[in-house]
Length: 395
Image (cartoon, rainbow, N blue to C red; front, side, top):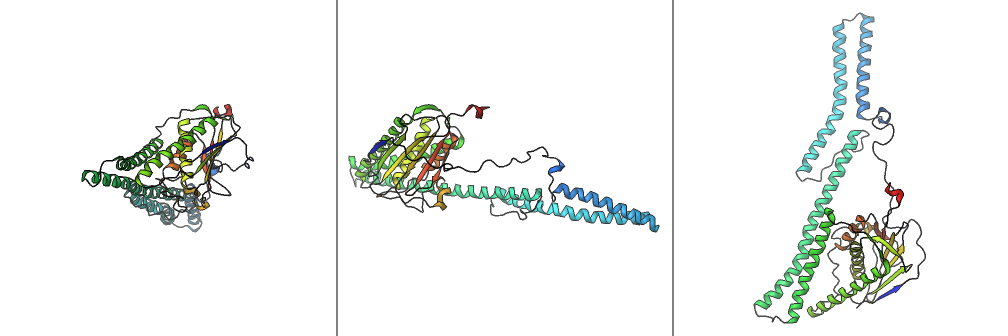
């Protein structure tokens, strides 16, 4: 069974600016500024500019032809006809440059409404409002295509995850019913193992659904970090022992050789968060780290004081092969099993790929950050929880 130790010696402080998930500040707000919505912020190639130019050019053409008519004593009706023809030609040119992209956008939008997410609007590099609209439609198509792909992957992965334990449970029960095997404790342990696997999958799916729908309320309170995390690690040990007992009866294996280490500094460190949701975060990160640890490896959970009052910085480190930088952005995607780096140890199947997604959503509910950080060895996941908002942020 993995052991648990605690330490209180603070490591060297991390360099500033290395918090996971840190990114640039919010971009400029559209329409902000004193000249928003006025002619002062009109772009040179905007539709407003084109229409204004059309009016000015039409007036100049008409005025010029009238001056020519006066000097050459040309009849006014000929001047009127020429003026109308020139104005119509210019108007037709400007109107075509506006309506042609709109027709294409209408065609692409109609295709998207029928489930064709592969089409894109050309002319997204235009320097006017139509170019902005084309970029927006293309981004919408990209998002819908990604969601459709994730939906198909969700159905395929859930079907695969459910099929395996259901098939095993059915085989055990069929053997008992047909008299091939007796309903002895060993056979029942095998059936129980498959049932518990189904239960874990359904529980994670329900948790993720609640988080998505925003029906999981946060019940923040102050708690002492060291005894709290110590309890989480002890529970992880008990779960590993229980799984090992069930797995031994079915001839399979689970990880019980990984050593868990707790490092909290200072020892009296406290935090302000929802303990139940933070339990989900830490438990899922530990479970993921254990699966990818080498035989007799070590998983370390570090806790340090954050920047704000009762804020908390957490780290979970393992000694596995680590995660390539190119995969960092996919770590917290649903059903991402880390196909690039396979889990270590006997019987490691990589899990359902939902644990890290749930951890990310729980951290997001707190307004915190979670991400992969640089590490000399293994994988290092950083979590930052904001704690109690300062008074200036509440005003």
